[in-house]
Image (cartoon, rainbow, N blue to C red; front, side):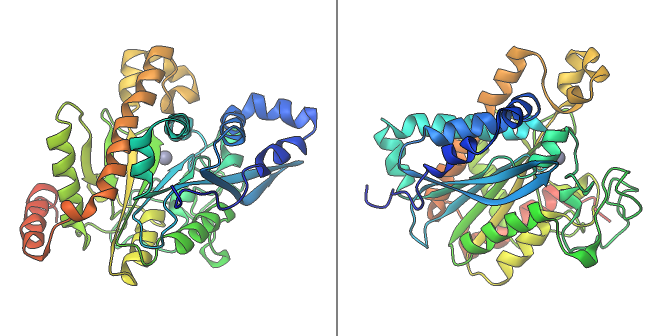
Length: 366
Ligand SMILES: [Zn+2]
């Protein structure tokens, strides 16, 4: 178990909690209970996990930390899974899914030898609440009114969806991209610093960014969002989809390039995909889990009366089902990353899978 050691002492987290006065703690319990849950998990975590604060977001007299937790192999060539939640502050269920996975992983680390052995072959880096200010304020954007998912320096090549595709008119309207001249927002720079430190040189890495609020079905989106043409690593996405569907035929995620739904400016994962794959011989696949919240509304139309209800399952049994459903998918991704050599397409399979991907996703594209 020599590889599974802490990189920084996790005792830093209770200190963070201790510096808050009782009013701040009360506010957090009320408006950001996910942060309390995360800090509790990290404070009680075994030594095999390392935690740090990547940055802090100021909001009135609060300095809300962006936490990072790392588990697993610290070999520089180990495959990586990067789990991200809470990019959009309203979509709390995304953070809750990441926290559910983290809680489960920390519990299993205490006794599960097979899980520990898996972690010797793969590294998991978790950023459960990337936009703590937005989540505290219960809004999609960060406290500056910027939609973090429209804020990267990348421009749609074709006509993007009006407003939804990203707009520069006003932070008072949704989907505000921010001011490209000012650089990315602090939350995105925090994520970029983690990605730049963590991913280059890896043979295989994968990000899963958890969102909700679009469609009837749970969807796995992959780049691009800025143009309709397929990405270079499309054969690897097709291979991943095939091994998932063969192993778990009773789950139904719909895999699609985001461009099938709408084009956007400033997509974070398009930007990171291009950055990392450009200088890297390995494969980096950024995936977005879009949990289909329209089903939750159909079953309970009263949910529409509450803004939360658009993006989060409010009925307890449905909430629990959402939290457990995606654990299987995240565990699958860990195993797929650890054994990537067994399914990533070799050169001769690559062109066949690419053809299949184009037939499947791009045949009817202009
Ligand atoms: Zn979202």
